[in-house]
Length: 625
Image 1: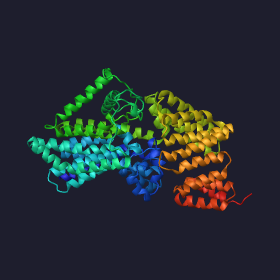
Image 2: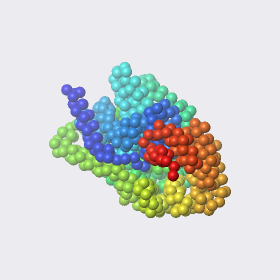
Image 3: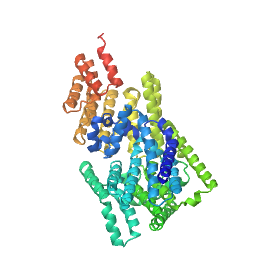
Image 4: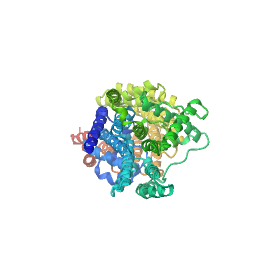
């Protein structure tokens, strides 16, 4: 009878989560999804699964290296399910949210929460709007998997305490899921050990309690140690650098000193705590000022609230283990991004695990008797339905970049991320106009994107991503209708700021090529070729390097030299479809149609639906005029 009640409660929680976020399935790839999922060639074949497990550079189409092997495997599987369409990714995220919610309910019951209290708390978590980013951004799946892994490891640890012999395998599996999805997973052993130790300490002396807790925590600790060693081998660092002590560039993560980071963290944590109670002004770019004054009332009040609630929760380790566990879970998940300076100090998806911790705290304070009266149950139902409707409405904003960033701008008109997001919308509209052949519309949309990019830089002058985007937009206008000399100056500034960033050198090479086309001077082409090839000395080789060098050669009229650059890419083992198609275009211009067709056929084998490859195949098959 009791098991049947548990199954019904779990089904209710799962269905509530799915109903609240079903509209997320209408969305596409947004924000970081574009470079980490949509444009990531490493995800386009299941044959790449071994690489995804060991290659941090497979994380993104950009020059970003992160080692999240399990996360990347789930992306590759979703890609294979729908040939890259967004729907399988979105369905997976919605279902994953439901599984996190029912695992949360199971943990709450295992820690002594009543069925009514545990189910109510899990329902509130399942429909809460603050989970919107974690569910709607595909790239934020890491936060869902982190929470799921932590809760699974904790649930298995509790079962182990109750005598389940095989439960240690669940502890291992949960820790592997957490570590394989996000770096914060390395702290799961602290959660397992802290909760197990507190529960054991209630009925034994301190020494015996710690001994027993460590004895049961070894599987989780072993996984975390192996994970950190692997990070050290693959990335060159096991953890992260400590915040700097001297003041620096506060808008850049690595430039934020420890005092500024503490001030920012206090305001971020306070904002998210308030939104968990009153979920309003939810936005992908929360307005967080970079203060450096611990005496500032906003900082002082934030620190007092966060520390006060935390201490109060930890002191409940004996009377209310659910409250203690929820507090530990919230801190385990939140501590890394509160201590480590990130370029975007606030991201609501990072609070997903913290929201789960608050739900456990709520389950610990709720009493079954409080929830029995019909009036109370009706009120809870109204709250759940209201939150669910708000979550569904928020998810509709994730259907498009324009809707998402328009809302972000309504919350904070000074949002640089919103300006950049709307600039990307204009770029996408320009691409659509390009396909229609409407060149006037292409230029109009690109100029609108430039205006938005300039606005984004004015609001956040030190944001490198905004500056890179602006250079790309200027280059998209081309040498005849754009401002290649201005793009050249901005690209040089990027290289001066970060000289060992290969992406900056590629942008500079492309700007030099366009400047040479505008000015008609060969010195620009020579420098462009040298700049592109210099990337081979500072980063792992990529076909893009030779492609950009070939562009410079072709722009100066040396088509055989451009082909030679692409030949070098093929000889180095980087015969990717873009390299082959660039080579085919040049070969067609040189009248070498048979060689061009061979490259096109090879590209179609790897990317049979590539529109450029299909167009070139048609062109190469046409009789010469």
